Amino acid sequence: MKVATRPIPGKSHRHDGELVVVSDDLRSCRRVRDLTLQDVLDSDVTEDDLRPHLAKQEDFVPASAHAPLPRAYQFLDGSAYVNHVELVRKARGAQMPDSFWSDPLMYQGLSVFAAPCAPILGKEDWGIDFEAEVAVITRHVPLGVTAEDAAGYIAYVMLLNDVSLRNLIPPELSKGFGFVHSKPISACSPVAVTPDVLPGWDGRKLHGTLRVDLNGTPFGRADAGIDMTFDFGDLIAHAAKTRALPAGSVIGSGTISNKLDNGPGKTVAEGGAGYSCIAEQRMVETILHGGPRTPFMAAGDHVEIWMEDQSGQDIFGHISQTVETI
Picture 1 (cartoon, rainbow, N blue to C red):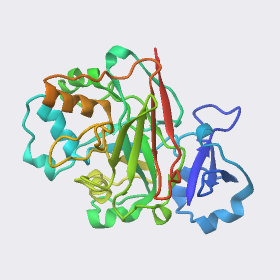
Picture 2 (cartoon, rainbow, N blue to C red; picture 1 turned 180 degrees about the vertical axis):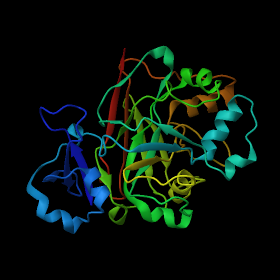
Picture 3 (tube, rainbow, N blue to C red; picture 1 turned 45 degrees about the horizontal axis):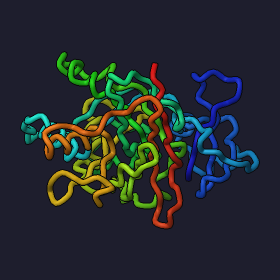
Picture 4 (cartoon, helix red, strand yellow; picture 1 turned 30 degrees about the vertical axis):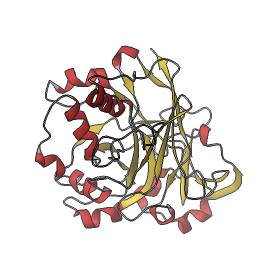
């Protein structure tokens, strides 16, 4: 089942919107009367249970959708692709602790999500960057769940742009207390998909090319199922080690990153898989050339993030965002 949330005309942005069930081709939908996605998660409602609540079919416009879950109970973002972390540290000449390969990195972010076409707001000197990720929405997850069992609590899968303000990260982390200013609101794909109908889903990770275009030019074509050191079972179990996770928790994969011949990747133009964030391309440039050459995003820059199935059909709809300076 594919679902989305639409804003309700005349309602505040704080409202959770109206839930719709979306067709496989993302062209039509049926409104779910009297239920939000959070209601569905809280009660473990099935697709069959929703049928009596469905209104008549109408056109679906992905670009007008809100995030599938506009207000989550929590957002925990991992760093499942350790190649990305390794490159970050290598670019600044730092060794990576061995524990990074066995214990996931994770931070707690803002649990309010932007619509897929919302602008990215910031100042250019903050180092505005995108991070293309896969994310899951969970049902209630019990305390201490194992990685093997954790995947069974995944209700929906979607895409995520975890916006980062790179120049604010070093001074913030130097305080030893984590991200706040450097991690503003993230945007989600228009559509979230249940694992049972998701092409490329193997039970714990999503296989398929995550497509990223920057200003209309291919920037990233990394495969989300390759080089994922920690799958979503691992990430959920890590998050639930000391606490249960309420239904409506969002777990992000972190920036998708592929290796090339056990080393840094290449740009799409050079025949490689490219990158899922600007920072990683800058890291590779630093390693190869002694310094970065690609700038972070400026006013008017546009990023597009999406994924297609093997037939070329859009799975989740597009995240399509333009930078607006404040």
